[in-house]
Image (cartoon, rainbow, N blue to C red; front, side, top):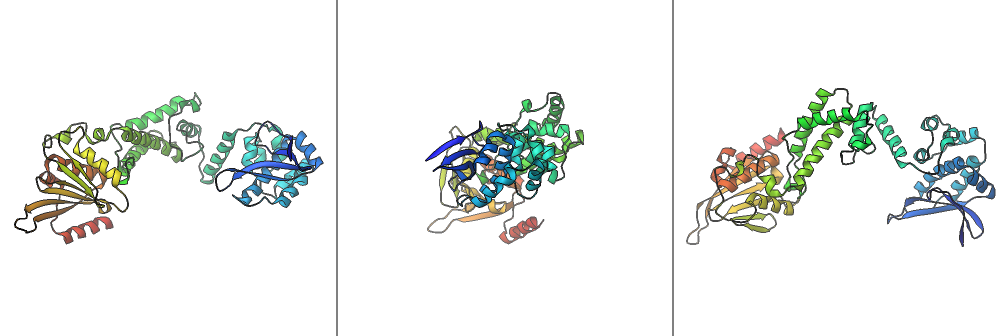
Length: 420
């Protein structure tokens, strides 16, 4: 039989219960292996209940000292009740100076106290009882998050100025640097917002006209790392020139924002739109393709593209790659059977082969092929080569060489490139 004897407005602050006639402190902390919250209890006395009921500060101090024991219990271990009971008298009953001295000898959860309004400067000086004079039953989790974020930066030697902090708040990365950045002007002090917007405008001008394309080699929604790095470099350089006083954290969050937005635009655009350059070069010189193409991968999958459909051959091919590409599936082929030519893309080696039928097989003889190899400069290089082949076949690839007919010569060139 379990009855609640005392509880506070915040459901997370430990409750006092009576279980089978015994007073116990009950708190939720941590989670089990199934990510369900764990509940712990341990015995207390009537004198402890009086202090817990009347003194919020001591109640919170006890909670902060018990939490490390809950962490030690992990996902399935029991609470060390003897260690928990041993905390009661030294925290709830002595004079403040003795409590302060006790806290200098034990582990405790500082963030929990900060979330409930503790004075941070006094906590840092070890005056825990004085720090809790401003404590509240309600919790402000973001206050504790801000404290921990500032501590992590301080450990790296980073000190934020007012503009640095405002920029991080604008992008939503003040508390968590790994958070995907977004634009949150309401989070910024209105007096600093115009200055923040000048920094953002500098970044936008630096990457105007740049884009981050998709990289189907790594999946349907993956983006081109080289494009991302180019945009980051351009934005960082421009913002650093215009605002040399900014710390690196603020600089990084601005370029991260620009790149994330560009990547999102690319992911949300239809593949056909992404493949078609604004200047119309994708169709220059070749007109509309009149012959069918066959796409295959290294696992035997095949997809046909025929003229007259609603989507371009390049869009269909890269979608096929995005669906099928994997660490053990990195060779893709486009073949024009009617013309007897094709290209084979080797993603694992940043290379390509163009294959032309020299003589068709007759009378049981095997056909004769000419195979030529070339190195490829990342995803952008693959896009140019695929578009050129779709427009004009193997002949259109000539300008994108050099092409090496000797496999050994090509392998030497590839090793030299990789060594550089």
